[in-house]
Length: 376
Image (cartoon, rainbow, N blue to C red; front, side):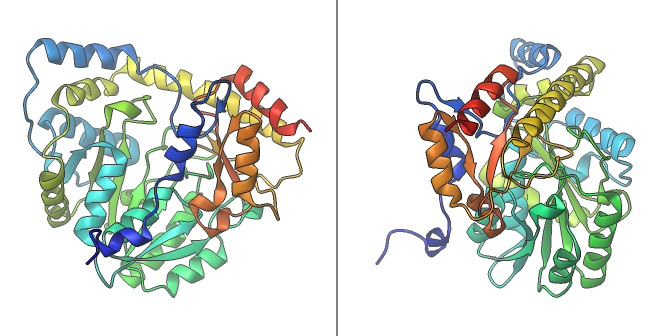
């Protein structure tokens, strides 16, 4: 008799955390971790401190404090044009990752198929397999900037998917899917009865193109977002989902209740301040700095023999080195003092690629890193 559940044989440790740990060695420039290297805006921190001083240190409603859920609902209508969401149709959870886990646990199980882009964020596949479901990979190509094309659409149409995870701007590629293509995807899902989990955690970190939320026009959508990337709150662990279907939210909440109970109370009161002008101004300044970094990275990548279309959002580039063992390449770069993530960790279409995160490295560090990358 084995001690471990059968599901564990198909789930690997996160490559992101593995290479981030290796990057802790002295002298290594860390381009692995998916976080912006900025402080949380002061107005948010002060709101959390105030909540602590006021004794807001106990359990909250499992879905989150009502004030925060009301603010999220108002934001979704104002900024994303998503109607029909109120505070009871939102669950605030421990980051985008945890709310995705709750959704997949509630909606996917043995015999179900969940479609995801290939490549895509490492935790999608792992969480689907932990839920006992199967993965249907939808191919993306570096030559297209990892934007879904005909091959992706055809594979989706003929898949047996119950759910599709859509991510724009995307991790690991930074690709921003145009509204026209999202609508093509959504029309297929509507015709095929596929429910869509729209992961929009990078929605405000867009440099080219514009963000489009499919829930603004389609009902078969669960919108997922988080405070982590937009306001540099990765350590606060606050994310949320919203859906017009109250029954869907109720099932997700059950998993949330039984796994986390509720999010940290004073962190939620801090997040309330993210809806202020001060926090928004800080986010805009951060985005402009990230745009500068993105442009610098693209300039340095032009010195290499790679395929890499300029990504429209997030803080990643995903250059394709063609017929290269990306794990060996990542290990070689680590020996040179630069830590990146091998592309194969994100799916078979990541072979020959590496993910470079410029969120936590300034121009000086990026310059040093590329000097090491391009050196003999």
